[in-house]
Length: 449
Image 1: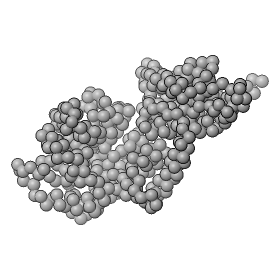
Image 2 (image 1 turned 120 degrees about the vertical axis):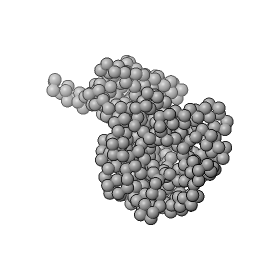
Image 3 (image 1 turned 180 degrees about the vertical axis):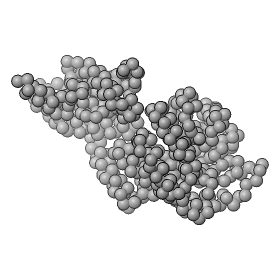
């Protein structure tokens, strides 16, 4: 009997947390669905994803990660009480099945309670750790239901929640089925596009205000679909991040950008410009990234100082210590680092003094509002002053009007980029722009804008 009980335990319960596993949860769901319409209580199924758990695991190790997962399980077990069931589907996906939830409003209230409970700090091994989460919700149908379909519906809702960022809740809607099918098809096509070389890079020039010269270009990936036309990065980059395709995509972008800079150098063009390449969160936590960067530099023969790797401020703050170590490796190689979207990630100034970075990029949302929002104006001025006192270069992105350019000149921003000056363009057009700007023959005391 003891052996059979152990077998059942392994079959239906998660070994780490003691919660129902996928099979155990599905058994509970199917038992509910098997009840007659008169006997079946109303219920909601909440699928919970711990979005940034990987970074905690990478920084503190598997032991701390397992302790944190067990703490999450304890809180869900308490929330489930005697009327529900908590489960772990594997990895960082948890489930709460709760009866007595009859309406979308009640399900939303329950999900909000769960989100607040899961994201409150955990005391783990004498540390206080916090974690982000998203929740997808499906409601048990009043007339007939299927456990597997309810899980699928909650998964579709969770996907929509994750599309919006972190700490979001989505309830399943019928139209999500079509959206999910389209998403799966686009992921398949993106994988094919990466493998078959259907992607291209456009380059947005970065212009030094003092000289009017192009001192850098930012490489931006574009996807010209053979049938659907140009697909927005805002549409396919999130899919790449969620599917794991962002790693091969990011490596392709880095290699292609460096190869393009090499081609320009061979023509005698852009010898003094920096190639700026954005890093995704997944890339920045890839321990093999420094080795890959070194490989690309050796392969293309460009100087390490010609490459600038851009990391968003929010990315650096997910794991400040790991960010510092990664940037230190870049600096040791001679590669420059830039903090992108500065002002949006709520970084501590104490960390900013420790990050071995060369450039701060003021987020374009602040640039957009400088004509109408005094707070954004003051923030841009403060960022520029602070950066210069720390001997950092300041880049302003998203410059679209002459009024914005005049203001940025007045606060002594070093470099600007945006549609007012040049939109992201193919390599040949970027080259022509670089050459045209070089012909200005900069002179001291001359204003070029």
